[in-house]
Length: 229
Image 1 (cartoon, rainbow, N blue to C red):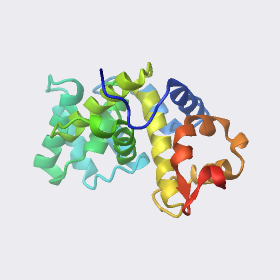
Image 2: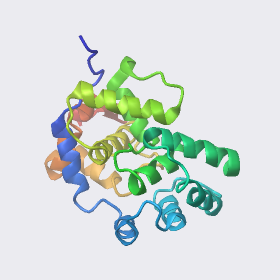
Image 3: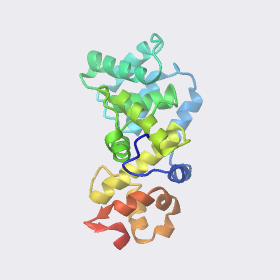
């Protein structure tokens, strides 16, 4: 018998996240950039610089990194999650001395292959929360994350794509962080008032209410269970 999820996740939660995300949350600038330069090798430096700015992926030497990507991408034959690890290693070795998994994973998802999962700390934390002990033990960060994503989809019986699952993981991760510390500065300033409104009037935010249902049941704000507020 396959292992069960440590914390439940349903397709209805993913659908609610997709509904929420479709209501104007995707960056218009990024959508316009993809429309103007749809090719994998089109305007690589521009894409890298805009992505780094919009998503605050904290690549300091972004111009050098962008130039390296412009050189490497047309040359490599690597695909899938291994491509992300390859580019991370190259950037670390040749430019920054740091492993920029978040930047490369997002660049890969938006501009190379939409089937590449988007990696960030919220997504990692939420996947780990759902999987518990069923997590992959792979030593490579992105390969481990991709294995965990597939395991989560399998155990939860999900039929969503990477973007739809990412919308859930981002929103749920932000909410988990907010529920533990409402004053945490890293929480999205756009989401914070929605979480506060959800706390006092769940009917005012039906999509958030539906996607966060099981999480709200176990979360607390200022040490008080949400359902008791």
